[in-house]
Image (cartoon, rainbow, N blue to C red; front, top):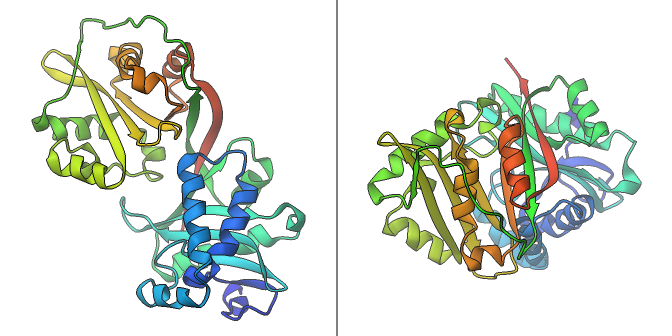
Length: 328
């Protein structure tokens, strides 16, 4: 059994639980190497923070007092080869949608692949999920990562959906917007946060909701939300499309104080209204937004919307396949 090989010492070869903050430096090096070509600015920032934690050395044990193994930072497992961390997989309880766990960052350094390390890391994650009473385990994988997809399929995972990530370079020309289709585009009112949340819940496919569960707090438009954004050096702009007195579409632009850092867009539109072009036009109309690199994540099944985004200068970066394994 996997549990028999899980040990906490560092002078061995095999899989063991991630030892809190003390392992973060080694994990950061693995993630930086494996995900180098696909990591966005948020990922690079997270890796940098992990490296800082890893450099704390003996002081890291203070952090472990407050962050139990498996519950903080990057909970999960590492593969150690002669004292060096060469693989990592995280597993944590899903924040919503019942009794589930999410596996992430399954990564093995290139020189150590092909020896079953990824499979043993996955088996350790699944065993922990079962031990903690989980009913399902879910993960994301690049659609073009055939070896990883084969591994997950062999473990019983099934595809539930896919999400496309598109990116737009700074200062890309903006075409004329169109396609209001009788709707009115405006800024939302503070009292409409519940309507925005309901819209997002309704149009997001169930097969990808587990990856980034929609939280009501992210749709709040009042001063407390603005204060949270200020504390984290972020900005946020919303636009909504109204038709027949109802909000039928919305777009959110999240920016960072550093204009070189990639801004993130999310868009939710009721399919029958076809308002993606109109909302995109207002979202990137300001000079400040146009001057920044932008990204948008959107359900891959919504081909018509992806074509609209391409018209506005967004280029496909990757597609993430969402997979799920039922444990009951």
